[in-house]
Image (cartoon, rainbow, N blue to C red; front, side):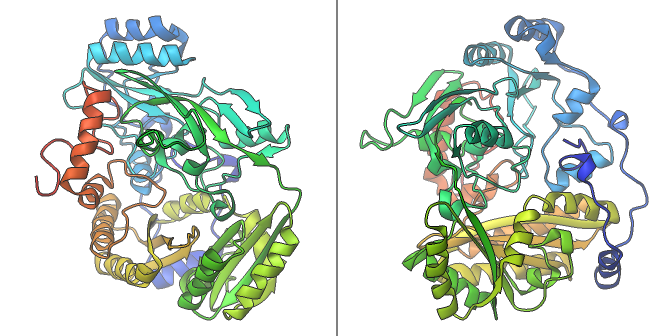
Length: 526
């Protein structure tokens, strides 16, 4: 992956002239004064880990799997949020790990945690490096050093139970490789988030990922039926059956824990037969409210498509659902529906009847196929916009249907108040019987300090989400960026539960310190 941006550098794209003109004329975007620095020019702190500790790590995994080179440290610095990229592009590598350590087994992970606990070394579990919420920027204070625990060597499909339709994977398997391995057996996970090209299965579980086909396949946490987790206090082996009444389900404690409670070393995942047929189409609704009502009807009455997403008026006009053809969106609100698997045609016909009844205008297959073709392109577009001098970032939330309009308005107003006159776009891409997500994309001209500019806007949007009754994140996770708002969402008793779990599983606090779990004394009302 590109160290200063997203994905394959060969897929980088130049902005069309009409987009550059739009940025210049309507948002006042101007090219930055200086280009991004070269990788070798990124400024890193000296390696803080003493040689005896580096030697102890090497004894566990082998010296070839303890990396302290400049490039390895840069490539494991932070994640892929806009502030992460803005910092690294100007050469700020201050959050770099001292070393990158690559274990090859559960036993090696467990032993590394023992060594790091004894040596007071902070550990950041690292999968695909795609966090956008500060999930890979751990606190260093009070530790002898910090390592990135890269799980890339744990990259095997261990077994497939064709009768139960359960596949056992190691956590470092990247999503495209998982799909390739399953496709050879006629199977699929059906999990396709925008980070699909680079994210890992362990990362999906640790962050409670939700994919673009969640309406049909469910969120990633719906797919997890079992986990093995190495913690400083020992091993958790969870999931003896699909469901159980044997007390609280501790699998749910690990899902979304972002490496703060333990390191996932194995996942047992529900898989499905690969669909023989895929159909995508577009619909137009007059307003976002009308399109939202149609989505609610499908979610509550059925049939629910495999993919269901609705762009608001601004996102439709810009054409963000078709990143390869920006500016071609048109009026109204574009809805994309996709149908996969058995009886796809029948489900499409039944859902189309609901969409027509609720005011939708059918647009045929072309908009759906264009979205499918460009479904993983948006992060590459962000790189081009950053290079052109725009601040562009995303944020998301979710709420109940009755509260969704209030939440939508509150976030948009907060962003406008913080940024002046930004371009704010939104879509709904995950729906449930009781509610849905809202995913915002924000574009504005960069100020002198674009990191501070976005932090100001993000703080305003987060406060608006909390005040309007939404959750601080639907699928990006908590990390450091959302930790305080998450604490407000949980309340003091909930924060205390998190802290108690952390203290029991990771008594020395070495796992991703500063991420997810608020420190003692910071709970609201404490």
